[in-house]
Picture (cartoon, rainbow, N blue to C red):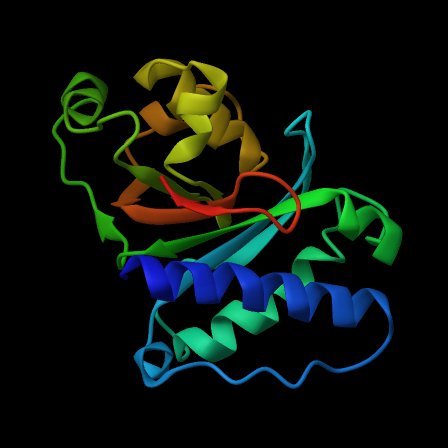
Length: 193
């Protein structure tokens, strides 16, 4: 996505979320570049602390970006880890949009081989084991200063599994990349990365 599309996406996500907090539907028109299918996540963070307030999205390219983006923004207002977002809270939060590549399973011969194929800051990860799935966006291990082993442990926990579940031979680990666009401050400048 170019910078203009990134800015459009973040502004649209904010508008959709604010409309949701006010109990109305948003009339948002997005450019033709948003008609392609793609994975996307919307993240809402408290400002200036950066504490997570909601993060929901679609890892797979199942829907046109326009639909996935607006649905993610609305759903992020109701992230089950938090109380529903209020309009007052939204005005004090920053919004980020992460556009995702399609996830690809990482082929590996051992836990060490798997670890060697993951790059912090580049790869988002999905684990699938025993019917449980967990996902972490590429920016998460950077924000928490995790190494690859800690990243995989936290991914396992996110799926409701043991920390070492990623070493299970039956664990399917997939990687994807993301392009991130974020407000520097509420309603502020939109920055890439």
